[in-house]
Structures are given as C-alpha cells and as structure tokens.
Length: 167
Image (tube, rainbow, N blue to C red; front, side, top):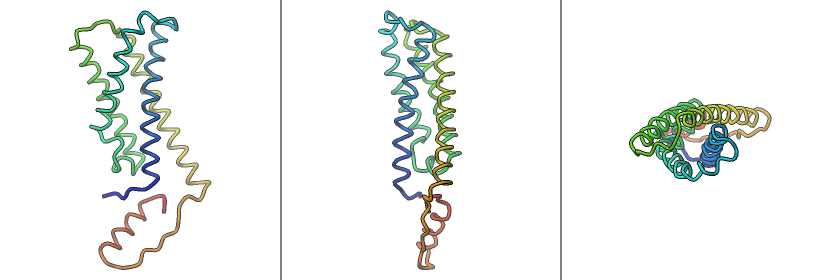
C-alpha cells in the first residue's frame, strides 16, 4: 500500500488535466488537418464524437489504472498505463463507431487522431519525466527523515521512505 503524498495529488491532477487537454487538442488538430480550418458543416456531426472520445478516455484510463497511486509511484508504470489506455481507447472508439451505424466519420480522421494522440502523449510523458528529473536534480526537494523504532510499522515506513524520491 502506497502512502498518499502531496506530490501524488499534484501529479494526478496535472496528468488528468493535461491528458484531457491533449485529447481535445488532438481531436481538433485532426479535424482541421483532414477537413481544413473552415470545417463548420462537418464540425456539427463531429461534436458528439468529441464527447464520446472524452468519456471513453475517462473509462479506459480508469480501467488501466492510470491515475491510481500504484501507477503514479513510478515513471515506468505511468508510461505503461498510458499506452494501455491509448490502445484500449482506440479499440473501444473504433468499436463504437462501427456499431453506431453512423458513417459520417472518416478513416483518415481516425488515423490522424490516433497519430496526434500518440505523438502528444509521447511528448507529454517525456516532458513530465524531464521536468521531474530537473526538479529533483537542481532543487533540493528531498527531505532527510529519521524513523525511530525497529518494529514492523517502523520498518515498513522506512522501506517506503527509501523507495520514495521525496525523502
């Protein structure tokens, strides 16, 4: 069981907000890339898909555990959960479009959407990793802590603090 810290709260919030912004920007970027900037007639039919795309992201990220404490405790876990969520999002969104019997959405749009999302998530996660590295390296964010007691609780707390980068 991981202890909850302010760092995990902040990381969860930042990831959630940036992920939703990234999905929406990817959607509108793909819409403009495929149909041009003056895509107002097509935009009305695509607005419903934007809502569905966001709701599917909430579902898949929750299913893959992207914002859980266990995933947020290590950078590698964040990467794994992100790519699982993106892949599951693609599968569910394509299934939704296939079974909704509404063929107004184009294949090039779907392909460009997931290329934009993949590139965006890749850059986002690398930027987050770089920012965390700079933060830990140049600003003394770790704190020295002494744990007294040699009982099981003291050893468990000491083990957690040794693994954590904050202490």
